[in-house]
Length: 501
Image 1 (tube, rainbow, N blue to C red):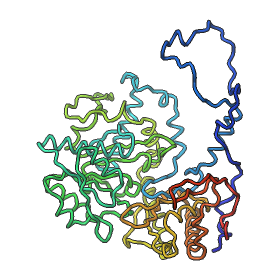
Image 2 (image 1 turned 90 degrees about the vertical axis):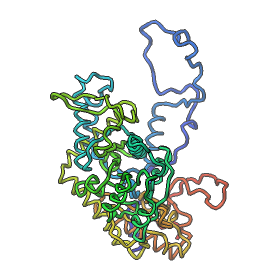
Image 3 (image 1 turned 180 degrees about the vertical axis):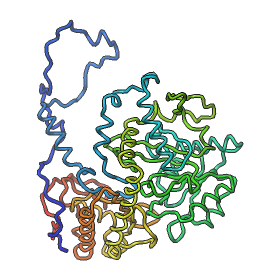
Image 4 (image 1 turned 45 degrees about the horizontal axis):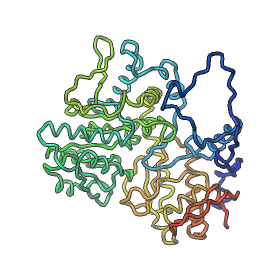
């Protein structure tokens, strides 16, 4: 296939855009206020020292300049609404619009967290129903919706483990973390006061059971495990892993970032997990990153329930209440009750899909990842020849023979209209290309992505300089990665995906 056959990318219709300060002129305003019909009040007299006499260097622009400025900037963004977002381990899936409709209903969007319980039964029911359904999905016994993101959920989960072990007389000293773990895992363990001990993977990229047996002792509080792992592989010996930990009094924490590969098919609580977090902004389709706040509920087994953050939602005599009487609780980890708007969206997603739909979503995500894997095997190196789940991890080994690395491939992929995959992670794969298509993508979109990846691989062999200078179609070129000095910003020069040939 030649580059001219790849139709994904076309030149952007929009022009470059300067800083809003560059448009500013003294005296311009984007508003016009009606004359006061009440007596004027001096802000200095009303606020005293709190009054700010000067706003400093603020832009002064007209309404149309503001509108055009931010509209133009918005068109520069790549988003999941615009195209495929194949970031591995991030699950950048489509956010269903029905979720947004529900979250904007007046009674939901306008609810105040300080409302009395008697007039908050609807919002409490949203949280209770979401909690119950997440417990059913995970196979766990109790849950808190408070954590504001995945890493926040990790910290909450490890604090639960610490509180439980402390109640047993010894919080222990160490947490084991596989070398394939998310970077937040060791940071979380350290923040909770634990020493981090690395656990090596075996030749399949899974937990080495012999190493786990050797390292697991009465000083180890538990293991933080991502399953499926960051190389997209399900831990085949997960039951044995849990058994080894439990036999020595440790607990199994599961990083739930990759639950998009399990929902409706397997429940962590059934294969020995003691506590885990869920990413509502990944698995359950609530907005991700700049699109909205995260949400990282933590589910646990019965033995950890007394230590959950308060308040918990309980039902008595047909009414829902916020229960604060939990003397062993680790305390609040978030103001109010978590990011409630995300709870609404996640519940809408779960109920719109139902059990069969959730299972189909999981199966489609796994199918899409394996479709990409099959089409690109041999073109890109596959370091672990074991079954893939929701994502596939290649390496740049074949392209590196021509001086092309994973970051170069990712930058060239931008010229074909795709957001780059996750670069150089997990670190157990040198020069990794981590690709997760999710269930959102059609076969047509996957085929376009595959064609682009094949084209870049061909360019690596025939014209590596073309890739070294990519991206060519963006307004700003790559930074000078050879020296520490930054080069001037390069303005966009309209070119085709085959630019430089």
